[in-house]
Length: 194
Image 1 (spheres, rainbow, N blue to C red):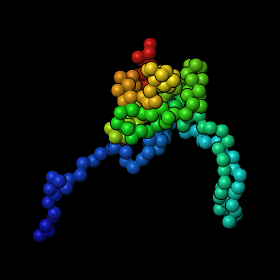
Image 2: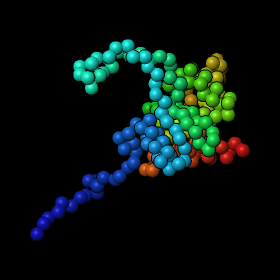
Image 3: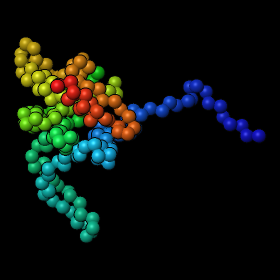
Image 4: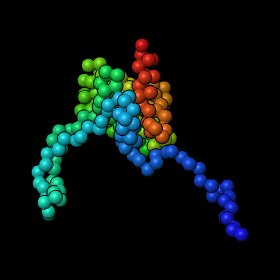
């Protein structure tokens, strides 16, 4: 007779899809691969432009960059096309439970997103509130209003409150395939504008 161990309730582990050991960017890249394979959209992570200064050649097939510098500040993380519309966005994470600090976004990124928005592109941030394990699509116009307001001495603040995400952003559900279905959220966002 074989005696199998009995699992007590406290020993039973529940399966959670939360994070699955991936970062926000890799979750988005997995989603983008799904979109590409399914013919939904073509969206890629932009490479960071660097200037290589020094390369070590310990062996012919083992070249290694030992010194490099950023050529120009990177704009945003991702861009591509969906239903004939240009998409451009950045991914941000915060450990805060109350807000996303505006210092997480750089001025050159705001300038770039403004240019995309002015040309009719779809511009936004995907923001992950780590403590709540919630993902939001924050439309560019909401981001711009908080960015511009930070310079107002009376009403300004250096962050976007969590409550603003709940009211003005769109929750992106986390799943298996795709991990972060932000295209579905873009459809929601676009249909609410018209």
